Length: 84
Image (cartoon, rainbow, N blue to C red):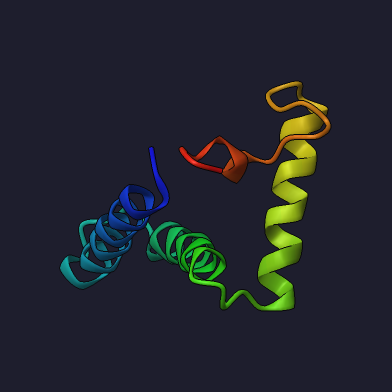
């Protein structure tokens, strides 16, 4: 997947989470809000507009994925994007 495809997927997921709050179909608005928070953070990161909080969140995610052996110690989850 390339960065543009990921951005398109993020937009769809953000819209779906927001719509679930509007439709009240979600079992918990907190679940949808959590998704919105993370996905919006990732969108800011991809757009080069990440806040220090965003950077810390994604650094922590990389650390956990590395600790679990999902990623090597030199790898980040975004380095798996095509062309990275």
